View 1 (cartoon, each protein chain N blue to C red):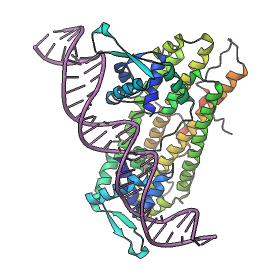
View 2: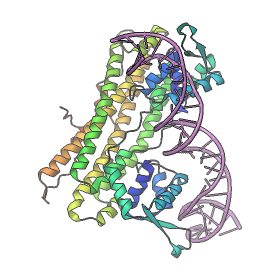
View 3: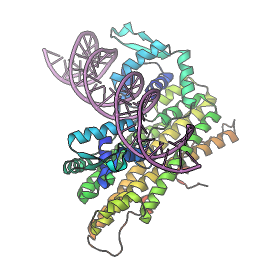
View 4: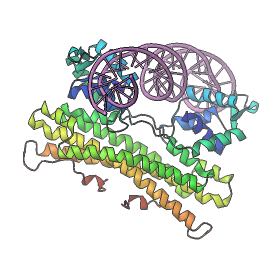
Length: 214
Length: 214
DNA sequence: CTGCCCATGTAAATCGTTACATGATTAC
DNA sequence: GTAATCATGTAACGATTTACATGGGCAG
């Protein structure tokens, strides 16, 4: 049911069409909720039916374009939801399951696993960083729009919350990259001295924390 | 479709009944895949039908108890899956959506949000730490079982992978706790000097990294 | 006039949750 | 005997993905 509120939040900054929502929600990262048009359009209909949003047909464009905006009820419902205690989803991590049972595979296969992991989070990091930086510089377009309708005295608070959100996302991606690099270093070490019983190399608990990024 | 392989991996260490699988998969964290009996039992049936596992009725207990073990085909299918490139799930983070749109709420409501976040990950941390520690000390029961059937020369590799997995989970939980504490410190600062325009407190990018844990 | 982006959907299938159901065994 | 735990499910619902469908506007 979170998709509903993610859309509602999006519309609380500015009215938008289903297509515009689709664009933000389809970009793999950046927004914190991904969804496809086949879910978005029915959800918009449903919320209009509930009276949380209202859609206006833009005959000006002669396209079949509907721009939705929040109603007073929709605003209240959004407010209720954001203040409610968050319900954390169950842990489901296929990457970890794979890693744990890769112990019958070659080091090369394990290496591919970590390299893919690193690449994945490097891509995410780039997106989160650009959002964070735009937020810090005050050029984030959606943040700018949101500030426009609010009193100056509230700006510090509004900006601060976004900074925390994006900074947290950056940190998460950095952690995953560091972890993968630490794991790759461990593999290097294993392969370098393949048959020693002495001085066993274990993935060091300490080394993870150091910043060894190139 | 990952549930199938999570179960398969579980059974690759030791044969088990649906109920035993259910117990591990129901514990909120600890295992990296949560699932309920209503999903597990049908999945076992289906995999038996596919010939990946085989179930034996334990008449000894006079209970309707079926113990499943991997077939050679099942082992191959598991191996294929773990080596396949991981497919990362879409980003869906209700916590972040809430945070971003909490900007019309009171600082007290925002504080509750961060405190709940910290509590949630402190609980997770306790579980992951106990698993990591048991792995490091060599007392993790499932790891011990897995090592038993494998050649001594493989042990270092097998143990190392588990350590990496659990260490990564510990780090993730620690990151979330640090982040929440940093956020709470920012709130404190905001409320301490409520109306100054000078020396604006922003959620510092630097402070997150420091270790300020009690 | 072709291909791309705008713009909106529907239908079927899959994956996961919630609620309910049943009976046997074990500890008090 | 009665409550907890063992042990296995089924049915309905909800959320998400995949595949398919349609048509207008605009640039080359």
